[in-house]
Amino acid sequence: MDRLQSNNTWSAPLSPRIRNIHAMFGSLPFSGSLEEVQNDFRLSFFITINPKTSRWNGAAATIAPAKGSSVWGTVWELGVEDIPSLDRQEGIYKALNVDVISEDRSLTCRTYLLEPTTVPSDWDMRPSPQYMDIIIKGAIQSKLPDEYIDQLKNVEHNNYSGPMKKVVMNTHEIFATE
Image (cartoon, rainbow, N blue to C red):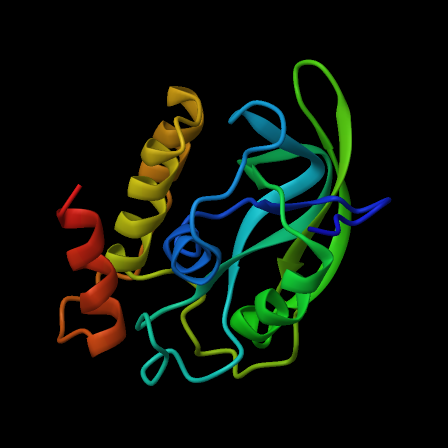
């Protein structure tokens, strides 16, 4: 399998998509340790469509530039031929190469971010509790540091308690079987 030369890995800083990666590409090798960190970015939440009609009933996770900050995640090694499928899965997210520093080396990884756009000022930019639950479960599954998982548990959510869309319910069922 051909591997990317300068961008030989893809970093998933946020965990809801880990399940989709497994489904699309099967079991993938990790590149480096599970405790990878992206420097000069912070976890952020943004929404580009009305939160009341969004898949997760709230804002989606993304990364935002923030000097001196970091976002923990998991690094997956994918082949060049996998990039178009990955890009399609990420949809409205923009592909971005970032430097990732692990305990023993530095990597350039492909990640995805939502670009800020002008949205109505009354839109709630907080994630739903169901979305945060999946992010936290993915972080635990990836064995990210306890301190980072605690940070995720303290993210303020929008208290949405209504019905969930089928795709979201399926994601919860997958995590419940582990």
